Length: 312
Image (cartoon, rainbow, N blue to C red):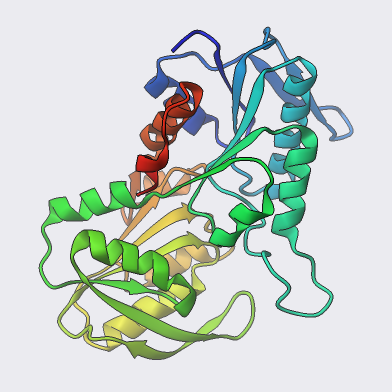
C-alpha cells in the first residue's frame, strides 16, 4: 500500500468493513455517521482525505433507504473534501430486483440508484452477485462485479459429497447454478415454478434427475425464503437425499427464519455481505466471509492491478 488508501464505512455492515480493513492491514477511516434529532442523516469525515483513494463500504441492505442515503451523503462528503477517487463498495446492491419494466407504470429503480450514485460523485462501483447482471450497463462509470461462488465451492469440495446435484430454484437462476455445477463437477437441475405474488411461489415441475441425489440449491438472495423452501420441499418429495442451500445475500425478511427452520434444508450456507445476528446463533446456518474477496479486489483496484481473475 502506498499510504494513500482510505476505507470508511457507514452503519450498514461495520463488522464486514472491519474484516476488510484487517485483511488490508489498514485502519478504518474516522467518520461520524449518525442522525440529527429529526432523523436526517449526519455525516462528518474526521480526517484528511485530500488526494486520497477512498473506498466506502456500505451494502444497501435493510433498512435500504437509510443505508442508501448514508452512502450517498458519505460520497458527497469525501468528494467535497477533495478525495482523488471514490469507490462505493456495495457487497449487496439494493433495489436490484426492480431492473426492468415487467408491468405497466412501474419504475426501473436499479437504474435510478445507479444515477444517484453517479450524481453523488462515485467514480467506481465494487459489488457482488447482482440480482441481474444487466445492471452493470446502467452505470457510465467502471463497475467491478464479483461472485461469492469460490468460498462456497471450496466448502463443498471439502465435504467430498457423492451424487451431488446443483439446483436452481427458478428458471432465472440457471446461469448462476450452471457456474456452480461446472466448478463442482456436478449435474444441474431446475425447479420450474409459477410466482403467485411477490411473497409466494408454486412449484410446477423439476427439470432433471434428483432421486437419491444430494442437492445444493444456489441463489443470489433470499428475502422471505418462500421460493427456496418450496423448492427444497419439492426436491425432497421427488426423492432427494440431503438438501443444502447456498445464498450470497441472506436478507431473510418477514417469516424467512421460521420457514428455513421448518424446511427440508439441512444446512444453509450464507455470506456476510449483509449484517448477521440471528443467523450466527442458529446451527442451520454456515457463514462464509467474503471479506478476503472484497479486500483483495480493493487492494488490486488501489494498486491499479487487474481484477479480472477475481471474477471467475
